Length: 129
Image (cartoon, rainbow, N blue to C red; front, side, top):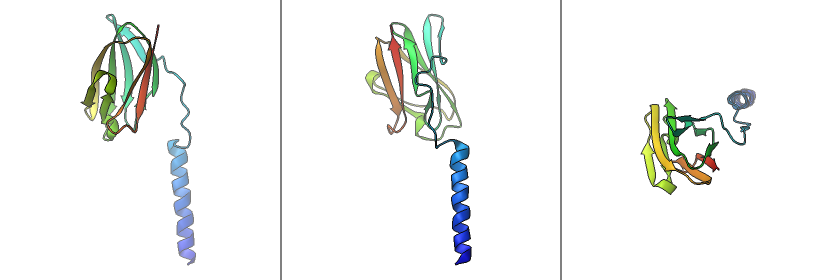
């Protein structure tokens, strides 16, 4: 009985430590990320990392410019490797490792939404004038 109690305590400490170590107890992130948007040859590129969800989850870009979403994957084996963007009728599987560009055209001011194939990991781009 004593061995079982000690095993339970050790398991609880290990699980708690793993949660603290991975940071899953805190989901703090900037409200809007502008650092992942660049303009190259007249096209706006929004860089998004896909692994265990999408980072950043929210980006800000300029309305009225041709826009490309660039998804970067690095050993991505979860559902964030399947991107769905209903407003432009896009469903695409990303490679496990690599970079994939999706042209979403010129967007008007407003919020653009996408998610993984299962809808568990959302992302959005706010287009501003």
